[in-house]
Length: 392
Ligand SMILES: Cc1cc2nc3c(=O)[nH]c(=O)nc-3n(C[C@H](O)[C@H](O)[C@H](O)COP(=O)(O)OP(=O)(O)OC[C@H]3O[C@@H](n4cnc5c(N)ncnc54)[C@H](O)[C@@H]3O)c2cc1C
Image (cartoon, rainbow, N blue to C red):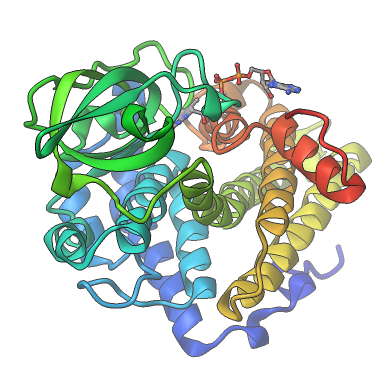
């Protein structure tokens, strides 16, 4: 036997993190282990999100954690990223809820809303008194959201919204939705609207039969002559670039988040391989098993270096959308491969929820698809590198 070196020692970035950053990471890591993990298997089996824990999640300060003011934690973007990493070490469904709330609901209200809207909604969202969702995708407008059919028509001091949004994280439990619609009186410009659950003509049927993100409510949003006060329009939004800028915020968190899921898969198969005996020896002693581990460890180091570098750039307000595309594309694909390899390394038991790996593997299929599919980010990078668009 020779000495085992922990992956953290190979990564060797601990000294690059501040005390506040480490505290944010370690607090969420312990909470996940002690509070969330015990609930998770049953929630996943039942296909529900344990809503009763939302106030406790809010207490952790993770909703809109990188927003200043409005009862938000005001963390820097590296702390925020580490929080996402630890939440997704638990489950991608939990990280999705928190990402949507902060990056896709609070961020657009902060950025495109007026002060009255901010004061009305942000503190409630920060405290988990409101859950929010983000309605951009439609049945016939997924990778091409500009093809959306949802319309907003001005009528007196209201807008009347009509359309269907599909695949909306948290819509079945949401108190408010940010709805993106084409304003027919303004040359079909896309604007955001804050729609409250009890507005007439707003319903959110569940999407059933998911194999992935089972502990995350996903639904549709049906807007049937839904009347929204004009005061609920996000007046500073305008054009597709508005929702896309929200997605850039969320994708940044995803780049960190999936690293947590991949770390959990790696640690699981490392521990398992050292204990599981076949052919009279631990399976971790076989070259093929070690080859998987070496590849995973290398990918994890790459993923973490990318997140930290881009996190520091974001804190310096120097992170571009194309860098975020690269982060999302690279880290999700790497995490997906790690989870899939880890599943096979567990053998038969790997297909059950005795270990978290197959849950992560199934969750990462959604993460690979949402917030811009892997292929669309490939095309976005290709466009940036060549100056030639292959898709629009
Ligand atoms: C669990 C889950 C949660 C989600 N949450 C939200 C949410 O909260 N809010 C929201 O608005 N949306 C949400 N989405 C929607 C998600 O963003 C879309 O599913 C995604 O954008 C892809 O759209 P689509 O499913 O219609 O696939 P399509 O766009 O139909 O794509 C199908 C396939 O074709 C490929 N493809 C499409 N166009 C091209 C092209 N030009 N070149 C090459 N390949 C191409 C895609 O990469 C993909 O592989 C969620 C999705 C899931 C699965």
